[in-house]
Length: 637
Image (cartoon, rainbow, N blue to C red; front, side):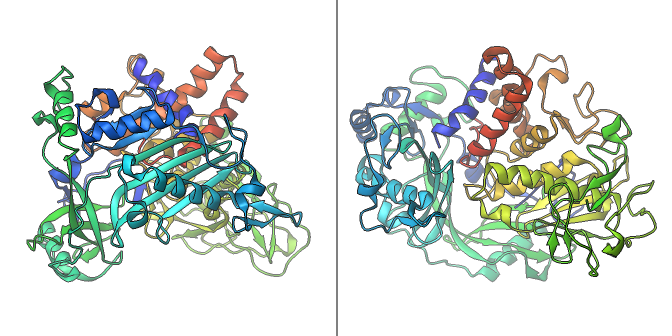
């Protein structure tokens, strides 16, 4: 239970510190992706330990940590080192960078702004800080002042066009920043700096996977993108079909430079031997545990490819066209109408078709309905399931309704392509339910993240794909997709939790940190879904023939309440995931999704006296604010 509490505390502390993903695992046997592969040195780069500075052996790396401790009054628990890089991995300096009410903060905007380059016009006509940009500028300055001890090249490798982003909450009360690393203009995959400002003070800085790249490291590839694509085709045992799903790009990957401690995944922590002994040895050798390699990222289309989105990295430096990874990035999950509120399983009122539910944010002849489905006047233009935030595309056909007499999509029995007999072939349970649920989910998100530009854009949802037992988010297209019923599974487009889960992947992809979080984005997608519906069973009614694996009462894909699984006494911990999950991202997600659910259902009510509604609202608020700053939820090893 101790490790579980640590994971919960991580969620709370995230406010002080800084592609395609789906529902369930599937077998790729016989498909174009059956030879998925990740090179051992690439996967082992994540096998590191974040240790107190005092545990390092004497040397230049430890001296830099001590300098930082002296500058910012950092105790042994407030500064950690990455054992592979020998550099700081996290510190909490708590120093004022922007005006605010933080500890010891005496800065003023009138002084800070100077020539007003950091001000923009507010709604009242007076200057108001551009908090996100001000945060990035302040972080850049602070890193530059301390780059010798942090051991990063700010001018050369950070804050170049489009590589930094920031999210501001509460008029600058909290600013979360993320800056990706590049070397001579080439992106360094997974290497970045993240930081958080609270009340103007820099309360957390993290540096991830920052290995040394020699100045003479060549960024000129020795093979072409076409040769890299051929190497992937040879690896897959397929021929190139022509075309690609991403633009070829030269990148730098960070590989492991040998085993840490020579003991692989040994959990021994005895002084001078086992895992920590080897890690300290790396630290004494100036953090030689990472090595860079130049690689092509290519996404060729191969013979037999269907819905797969294939992505590969190929060594572009040695001339051998060594395949470093080959992966399928599709990781298989009053205008009014009749919808399934939570599931189509027939259990209770939320599991049966409910009539007359509002269609929020629907475009009716140029007028957008309210959250309650209301609009002002009749229109002669036909209406479909589309508005400013959501567009439904149904393979059963097009939805179209004449709004002159009002907009009521109604409902019918059946599933998949069944319709009420009007409104077009796309007036299905999936399109009606999805349009309602996705709009309500996005409405909640906008209330927490009003400055997130992705939430103001239109999301396309593809319904009733002629397959079964899954759903997925595609990071390349930005769309979500849902399958018809069959093979013992319900239609995934008729289950609210599955809509919310796939939307959760899209939110993770478009929050304050570039890309999907590690070691698994499945946990946060489950959390968004569970908190929206107040149900730990993810996708209730998905399974038509029983409960999910290890579940005592959940007919969905999994349950994130460990008390409802097995003996009810075994929360999923980091060590458990390391030993049992292998490459399963859904399994890895349990570690922190269970922790967040426990925060809501146990820690806040039982230990801090919050009622259930307040605990839910607080957990949801913390999640939306904190998750946007997370690149890695926990380290597997």
